[in-house]
Image 1 (cartoon, rainbow, N blue to C red):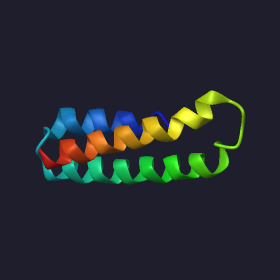
Image 2 (tube, rainbow, N blue to C red; image 1 turned 90 degrees about the vertical axis):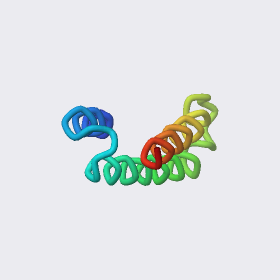
Image 3 (tube, helix red, strand yellow; image 1 turned 135 degrees about the vertical axis):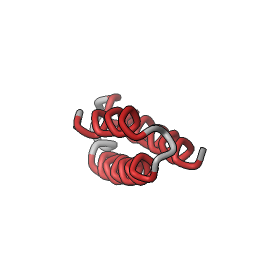
Length: 72
């Protein structure tokens, strides 16, 4: 899972925040984060562990920030 943030950081550093590759990668990673959040909400929300209940919120908010960054 650490490869997604590494790809975002490397692509932003190499191509800049407004390059086509960076914008494309932001949106793809945001989609993956939403998919993982949905999977976690469907499977992990039934457990008594609090972290699994908080995880979809954090993943969705990270995806929203990436979408906002790709539009700016």
